[in-house]
Length: 304
Image (cartoon, rainbow, N blue to C red; front, side, top):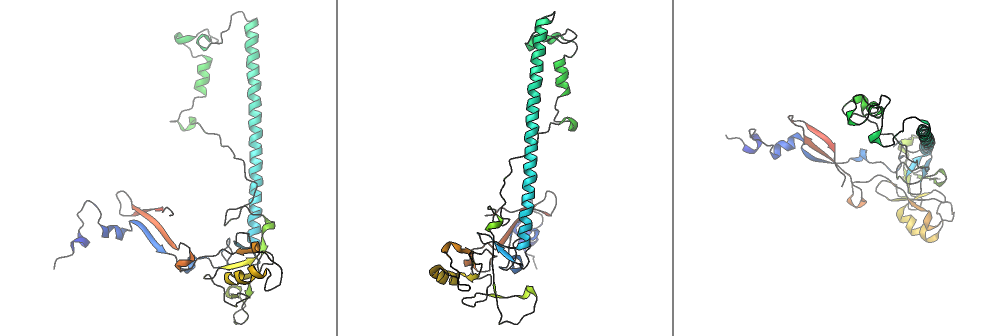
């Protein structure tokens, strides 16, 4: 019985579609599973269930200890960069002053030789004489200018003489940024948030098994719901209840504390498998074949 030609043809000068597919050539796509999605009750830094959660004005949730350590580390790094920048400016100023002093010394020396020397000196390079009296194209010995040029010559083909560009320290930013949203963040802009635990469900005392509900409609909070926190008191509601009651009554349903519409902060969380959620849950990776080998070399795919 004859075999299928498209599956067993190995004498072609190019790869067939089936061979490329078996080697993993091209863009590989894979849908992210549940383990790759951050739950709503997880810290954005340690990715563990949060402890004493704090939220920024953009809705990113962190553990209190994690975000404080992050901001303190950023402040230390900013101080280090400021000190390095100040040291660089001081060094540049000293080098500039040294150049000015050397230039003044050369001018005074040239003036003194011009007025008190027996042989007139020439400022033109074409008439520049060295200590041995040779000048111009007929010089047999290297002049002082040529000696200096040979000594300071940079050769790109010699590792020891390769020129190095001076590493300059840019002016550092003095503001700490949010590690998740990349916007400016200060400790005083963080506010604590409080979730309502589901007391009707009998579960273990472990913090990993906690279940949270909306204090208004008693719906269990999951990644499928959009959550809103009040920056005035920190209580968390589902988006429907927040827009229906808090935005109209201007008061929290739990503690009766007054709130305004600007106090409603939408909490950021991981996506779900639903298309309407608006998250891209498909990971892509491009593979191309290596020269002379059947293995694919991987390089990151461009985000679209």
